[in-house]
Amino acid sequence: MYEALLQLDPIRINFAAAGMHTINIVLGFIMFGVALNLKLKDFTVLIKNPKSTIVGLFSQVIALPLMTFLLVLILSNFITPTVAMGMILVAACPGGNISNFMTSYAKGNTELSIGLTASTTLLATISTPFNFAFWGGLYMKFISNRAGQYLQPLEIDNSQMFETVFILLGIPLILGILFAKYFPQITEKLKKPIQYLSIVFFIVMIVLAFANNLELFLKYIYYVFFIVLIHNFLAFMTGYLLGFLFKVPKRDRRTITIETGIQNSGLGLVLLFNTKIFPQDMALGGMLFITAWWGIWHIVSGLSLSTYWSKRP
Image (tube, rainbow, N blue to C red; front, side, top):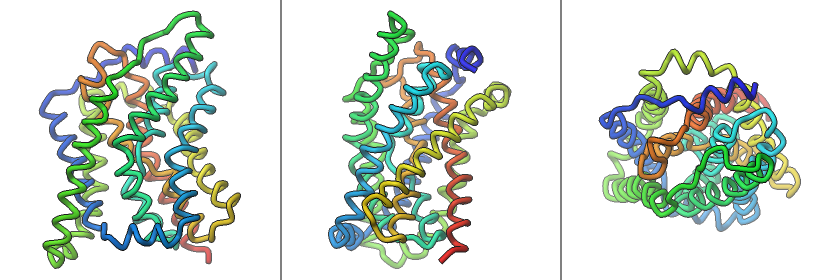
């Protein structure tokens, strides 16, 4: 497997500037849609339910990146550094907005889900650059000590990542919250359509990323499929076990599980395509494949888990 994954590293994704702008607009639209569902009471719910809130935030912002780091160490003989860094990047991203729909479908605590998604998204301007730099840096030191040298330098401009995350997440959220406040009637009519369009647009974003590389994607997806499967399962289990360990209510446990297993990997893709953060001369094939496939797979796994829970009390 390791030799096959090495073939991903030299792959350069053919991507035009127009496509990059389209992806930025799509992600901005998705985050604007998330903000339309946000109200001040969503955050007061978190204050009234501090135990589940703390466990949920801990699970996503701290536990998942930590567990991912341990997983890439365990798999270090089977995966390449770029694949490992792709897993760390996904774990550093905030929760995905589709988790709110999945939580509702799974009979979880929808208010808690919306509050956690909003909170991790707001925290992402700090937590995403920090977690990627911290855990990614530790992993690269591990690889360096084991191999005697870096296989590829992966240091990035954290200030540029911070700026990008704020622009792509912070501004659409602010605009969405203001729009919902001043145009409540229009907002109510737009919520559902935008929710469904967000799912479609995210898939479009994946297609755009690999439109000129479909043959490569199909050729190598077999190797990343099981890696993402294991990583995503670990994310769900991290949320569920923490909820179980701290004895949060069962509805909240379902919410924390889904929130931890559904990541905004679209943000990860946008960051990877930003040449100011990841220069074009860096071989990022492994990171791109992991991030893109996670974006597709977590929809499948999340909906499957939600369907299972929807049929249970």
